[in-house]
Every structure is written in structure tokens, then in C-alpha cells.
Image: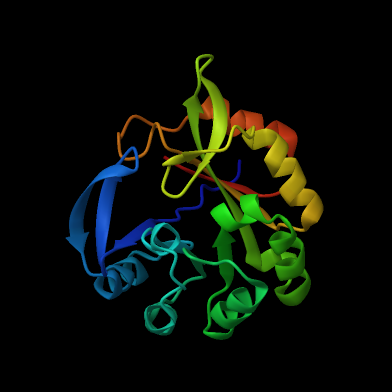
Length: 204
């Protein structure tokens, strides 16, 4: 049996770390750099840092913060938030980050997946699927901008598209389960697992 991989996800909001419930009710929980130091000592397998303000506010990634996090981090680091162009992906990788996660921009401009993969390698491109049940039929669909914008897109179908374009990994994030401490949405994970053969990580 494969050993579970432990990958904490740190959410950055207004410069600090927060915990959310269903992408809302953000509660301050500490400083990003201090958190990285703690997880260094815990010897986790990987770390994800997501700036949840960047896309909503329409601003670029905070390269200074990313560089500081990468310098402190002793495990593979994945960054998410505000990434819209292949040039931004290249710059983040140049700062010492192993993976760049893209979500809203990948859905709006899927060619970003292909071009970013071509430039830095598919192993460094993670496509994030923020999913919750929507509409009258309560079907799984992708949402963007911190769960505020419905797309009507089926997560399994988009995972297939992302894989075909060169994504190296899929990150499935259940908005309905986020912060509830009620366990993973296994049905959602299975749906994406059935759609692609890429490595999949689960949040929520």
C-alpha cells in the first residue's frame, strides 16, 4: 500500500495565514514564514501556498513573498494565486518554487496550461479544480475567484482537457467540504480519478 503524502495548504490573505470554511469565514491563524518553519520541522512531503487575494483583486503574484517562502522551505513548494501568463510561471519557478498551480486563468485561457508546460515542464504545472455542487440538479461544477463565480464546467471533463494540454498534476478542492473537518468528498475525487491518469491531490 502506498504511503499517504502529507501536503499542508497555507492560505494567504492580507499578508497573513487564514483558515476558511467553505471559502468564507476567514480566520487569522498566523504568519506564513513561521508556518513554513514549523512544517520544516514536521518533515511534511510538500507545501502549497495559495494567495487567495491575488486573482480576486486582479493583481500579480507577490514575488517578494514567494522568494522568501522558497528560501525558507525545505520541502517541494507549490505556489498558487494570481498567475495569468507563462512569463509569471517562469518567474515563480526561477525563485526556487518547484510547482505553480493555476485555476481561474487556466479555465479562462486553457492555452496557458500548454504554453506553461512547454516552458517549464509538465511536472511543474498543477491545475486546480475548485468544485462545488451547483444549480437545481446539484451537480459538480467548477467555480473560480474563490468560489464566487460559477462556470457550469464539469470537473472531470476539464481535468481531461488539462491533461491533454500538458498539466502534470490535478489538485481537486471541494468547496463544500473546505474547513468543515468532515472528511474528503470521495465521490468527487473518484469522478476526477476516473477521468485522468495524472497524479491527483485532494483538498477540502
